[in-house]
Amino acid sequence: MIPQPIPLGAIDGLALTSVMAQFRLDVGDAPSGSFYIGRVDVQGEVLGASAHCERVSHDLVVEVAEEAHDEDEPPPELVDALSKLAMYRLQDRAREAIKRGDVEEATRQLEFLATRLFELGENTLGEAALQEARNVAQTSAFSDEGSKTLRYGTRKLMLSTGDNDG
Image (tube, rainbow, N blue to C red; front, side, top):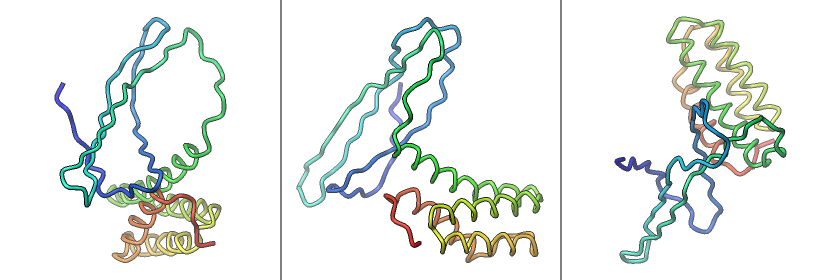
């Protein structure tokens, strides 16, 4: 199999960094047990160190059980990351709805996004989502400023570690 690099850009070497990947696996009628599904290789250059490259590899293994069973609660960090990803996808779904001409659905997605942002204490971004919902309802399109604010604001939110502008 040919490696498929995914550039992550600059990462702060002194801060904890997590990367989340989503895989869809069809285990079908596989027997219970552990199955190797691939390897993740992460490599990076340390800036300021001439020709110094760090590399880490990790094998990905999936456990297949005969019967579904309740697992422990997922780690709070994962729940938080998925919540922030869902908010990014909400604004993305609103864009798709506008492309289809479904202004009502786009408005609903933006209003839901605003509610979720307010719940997180992201008041400035929540207000921007609410304003954009009003704008979309009136003009059937995103404003340039609102579009940028929501796209980059929700993207930045995914990269944040819990800081908010409450």
